[in-house]
Length: 471
Ligand code: ADP
Ligand code: ASP
Ligand code: MG
Image 1 (tube, rainbow, N blue to C red):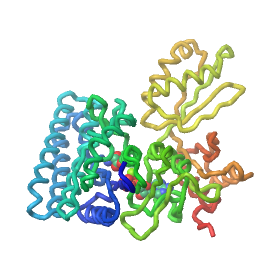
Image 2 (cartoon, helix red, strand yellow):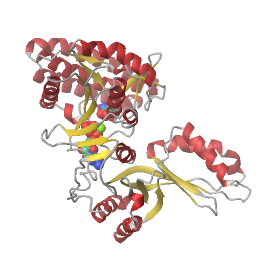
Image 3 (cartoon, protein in one colour):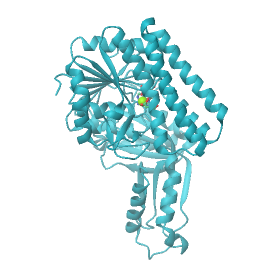
């Protein structure tokens, strides 16, 4: 549609202050000299957390807490506005900020009154973080001579109605992108689109899940047939482990779509888990880059990469292991698994790892901790008869566990690798609870005791020599 289009996404830290916004804007200006650019922005760092905790305070009836948080949010944006924009541009943006804060106040008051947080209002309220940051950087770009306009993604990204974790409906989104974004791009105006949010076909606001601005950017890159997507964050690219856990983690030059998707699904926060899917069919390459270190080349994510074997290790601490065991031979274990998986699907709980034993027909699976309540209630409803008649043992939940995943194309071709990994983990006295080798053959998932998770990550990273650059 727009030849050579570059979509760029700036994360929370890259939008975290007036100074950071200036750097982000300079990156846009430099790129826009030679090609059309559209950007997707996150809320300023920590703002989404603060909006969310304000809504929780509202639900608990904490009026003073709500008021204080709103004051902090407004001040942070008003101060940034004054620091960022020339004097003659400030009033217009300050009044946009005021308007958005009023919208948030209205939604919080509704929650205070109801003493509950309807998911739809939460989504509407959370999108205000991105709308605030988009207004600021769009005004700054525009004032600095690059025509730019803030766009609420609610007008463009059409989703289903799974509030808090919505999925895009691409056909509608492509139509809206053509109608709303393309004319701006053709007119030489840089669209600054809010990350994280969207709306249902009938206009009800949704969000794409925490960290979802990466996903917004890939949805839009795909809808606009972009040439490339660059995701700007606060590390030099995708690394062999979370550098906060493993100080000698190394930046990976190139990873495949499949590796990136596996890493993200298994907890590498550097990418939202659903970022990759919209890009694969069109083969749109993604770069993960550091807005704090502009000279670092970053990581390219593309269909192919050279080499194979373990590339990176990730972990997830907020997970729980649920075990189900038939107590009677009359139970058909396979049917039971089918029903359990269906109930989990209906609860929108994602199974991160699954293992079963063939003789006792027992099985266990790992899900995110915040999905345990809903998953358990659906499972108990589904298995109510079997549980009541003790055909199935009571469902067990163990949330004192963590997930570690080793990811790399072609790992299946490395005999003895799994053994080395398990030995390294056990040598550090970390108890392995369950193991699952994904059918994709590029991930080995290992469930360990929570208190051994970080040690296990370090041990695997060292054993596989992931921090050592390939020569
Ligand atoms: P943004 O706000 O830009 O979206 P995030 O905080 O969501 O940034 O993601 C970047 C962070 O992801 C890094 O600061 C890093 O600590 C963390 N991270 C976790 N795993 C990895 C990994 N394998 N490679 C790089 N960063 C990682
Ligand atoms: N601001 C949202 C969040 O913190 C989305 C994002 O930053 O990607 O979850
Ligand atoms: Mg992120």
